Length: 252
Image (cartoon, rainbow, N blue to C red; front, side, top):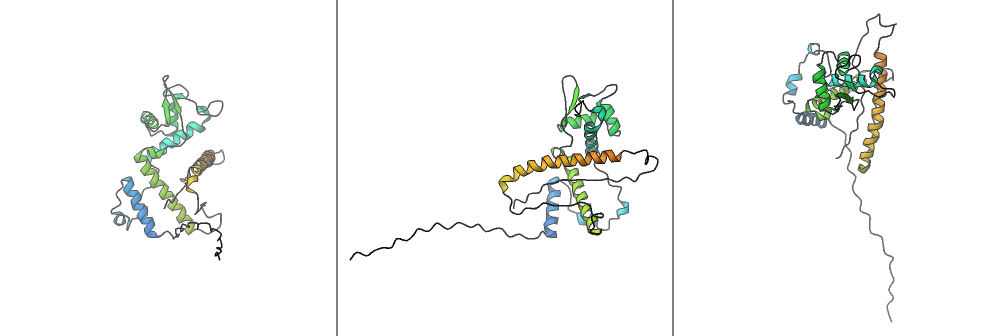
């Protein structure tokens, strides 16, 4: 008698399950290590950081100011894109000569950054690719914001200013009441399972919408910084204001 064999249904291969990395809270040690790594990357001496800051008298520290060169370049680029005298019929910044009677680069520089040498400023702008000079000696501007990471010194100063301003936002919110009127705006969009292949698309999205948002804030602040007939007779209290947008990626 021939033994019958029961044909078993073939089972599909088991799917390989990759263990999801466990999330953990960021610790003080993590932040300190990242800061020291950052300072080392920038070539800044942080070896005696603790000794320098212990006992520091805040009243002895001079008023905070942006790095003059970065601030100057940013002010000039902004004015070139906003001042009606330097815009064409479509609202775009017009090419200008270094020297001219009514409208020139020297006059724009003297109006926005009077303490900077116009020739040195033009060389700096051309070096970072913000402007170009054609055969007719017309100067054309190509960007509204400064590409600080193309210059090591500018990159270092911008990094420190960004860290300092962000820390001050956190300190203010920690020390103020939780009502919307007291808190400075600070929100974060977080995703712990984002497809790494979509990072490039996300970068483009943040750059496009973030640039438009920042320019809108910049225009609003510029308009409201101009004295009106009502407040031009009174002394106004002036402060520095920072509005920032950033994208952080934890590749670990």
